[in-house]
Image (cartoon, rainbow, N blue to C red):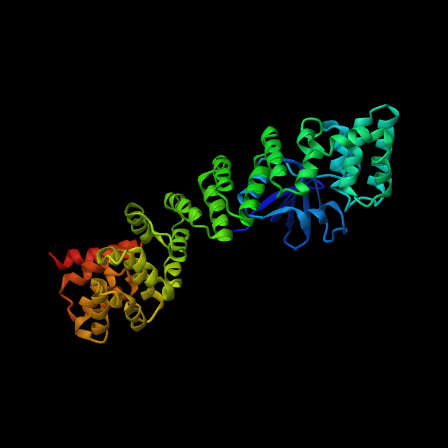
Length: 459
C-alpha cells in the first residue's frame, strides 16, 4: 500500500512527513510520522483537533504516548482514518511548548487544558505536570469547587495511578459524596463525560462501557473514534452488530476509502460475510488488480451477474499480476466457472495471454491438467498446442502470427509477420496485420509507414 505523506510547518518551514501509524487513546490521537532521514515525529490531537507536534526519536517510559502505544487502538499510516484526520485539519503548525499552554487555555476548559497538557509529558520537565495539577487542585478547593477538584483528582489518577498525593486526597472525607457517584458509571456520563471516557476506555471491551463510549462518540460527533473502536472489536471477534455499525459509519467516506476499510477488515478476519460485502465495491472500483486478488484468494462464489462483471473487468488487469497467480489460479478459476466450459474459457483467456509473457509454453499447457481431470477440454488450449506445433516451422509464420495476435502477444506477432513479408513480399495480408498491430500499441509512425506500403501494394 502506498505511503501517505503530508506537510507540516516547523519554524515557518514546510516539512514533508510520512505517516507510519495512527493511535487512538482515550480523548487523544497520536500520529507517528517520519521524515526523509527516518527521524520520528509525533503529532498529538485532542479528539479530532490538532494540538501540537514535535520531533523525538525517544519516548519517555510511562508517558502518555508510551501508554497510548501500548494500550491504544492502532491503524496504519495509510489507513483512511489517518488520511481523514489529517485532511480535515486547517494547518499542522508545530509551536514551542511555552506558548502552547496559553493557546490551549483560550479554547478549552481548565480541566481539558490540564488533560491536554498531560499528553506532552514526554517532552516537558518531569515535575511540571504534577505541579500544575496540584496548584489547580488547591485553587479549586479554596474556591469551594469541590466537584471540580474531585474531577481533577480523577484525571490525575488516570494519569498517575501510583501517586500517593492523589490517593490520599481522593479518599478524603470531603470527597466521599463525589466518590460514590463514580462507582455507578452509567450515572456518571451526564455529570462528567471527560472522566467517564477515561474510565470506559480502560476497560473498553466491557459491554456496558462500550455502550457508553458509543453514546459519547455520537453526542460529540466523533466518527473516527467510533469507527476505530468498531474496527478493533471486529478484529477481536466478528459480530453482525459491529459489522453493521462499521457499514453505517463508513458511508461518510468515499467509495475508494470504503473499499480500503473493508479490504483491511477482510485481511484481518477472513470472514465470509465481509467477503460478500467486499465484492460489490471492488466491481465498482477501477482497481482490477485488487479484484483479481480477491477473486483468487477467497472461496466466495459470485452470482452469475457478478461473474460476468468479473470477466468484463479482467482485460484491464496488469499482466504481471495475472502471471503471478500462475501456480494457484487454475483450480480456483475452475471453481469460479462452476465447471462450465464456456465460462471457464472466458475466465482464463486473459490469464493465458499474461502467462505467455513470462512462462514457458510447455508449463502453460501443463497448467490445463485440472481441467482435463474435470472432463473439460477448452478451445484456447487447442490454440496453444497449435502455437507449439507451428513455432519451429518457418513456412507457417503467418498462421503463428495470427495466433500470437489473438493472445495479444504483439511483439511476437510482429516478428512472425515481418518474416512472412520476406517470404511473400507481394502478399498484403502480413502488412495489414502489421498496420493494425502498430496502431494498437500506439506506434503511429510505424503504423503509418505500413499503411502507405499497403496502399502501394493494393494499387
